[in-house]
Length: 67
Image (tube, rainbow, N blue to C red; front, side, top):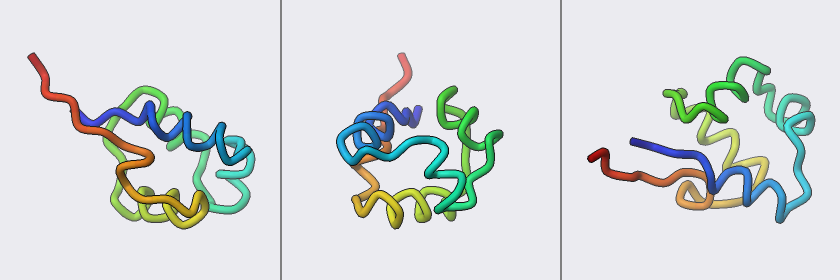
């Protein structure tokens, strides 16, 4: 399972809000909800997040094996 806990930590460190994500990345509220729920998102969204946060993929997402 892919989880996005690191995304929220990275956003906090960089002072980026979900409002900024919507305005700078064009990420809509539905996608933000999906990220919070650790649901599937498109790879282009991951790319946008990395661009705006100036980070690497491992700074926003993590794979955790399901038991």
